[in-house]
Image (cartoon, rainbow, N blue to C red; front, side, top):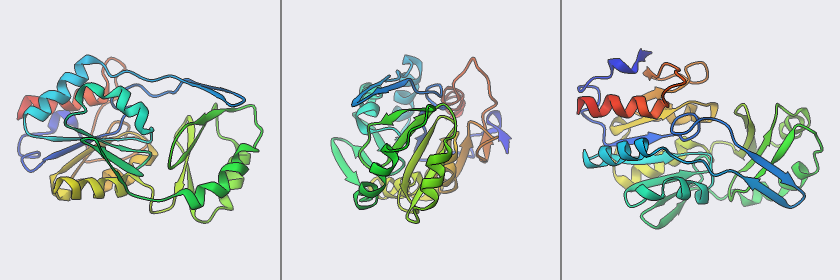
Length: 249
């Protein structure tokens, strides 16, 4: 892996689509969630104006921009409202994509989720903070790993459970991944793998980075890429990547 400062103009001459993960890339990691009975309180994160201006500038330079996240559509629309006219949102780990007012659903997970969700709701553990409201996947936030959840999920042959350090994402094996979402977006935008640069920082980004022409990791201790962003608390990883691209195009 090379540091992002070694990304040169010749590396990105074929790139047409830039894909960004959200948490740990465009905003800091961490989710503030609290669930009491049927009431869930969830913080909506904000994108800094600097990053929004960078995204606008990349669009002016001719790049398609895709946001690929485990987050739900409503939250992503709130976060990226200022750039929605030209940004596509692939949400809930590749489950569906919103683009210019149209939703493209990539997978139907309901028949799998309707059976496991009641079982998960019955798990009682002080480490569980709450269930994040979503359409296609199940996300359970907790202070640390929960043995009861992992034991339950080992018995679900059609589903995966990924621990990302603060939550479990539960989805359909092979069907509900960011790589599947990226492949659908590539068809919508009519671009090929060699035309894609993707950036992620967590375990659910592995397939996404493998499916891209140029992979950039924001946390090389979790996922590998062709280039990496050195961890630095002063700068968000997406900021560093966009600065580098805009300096060479």
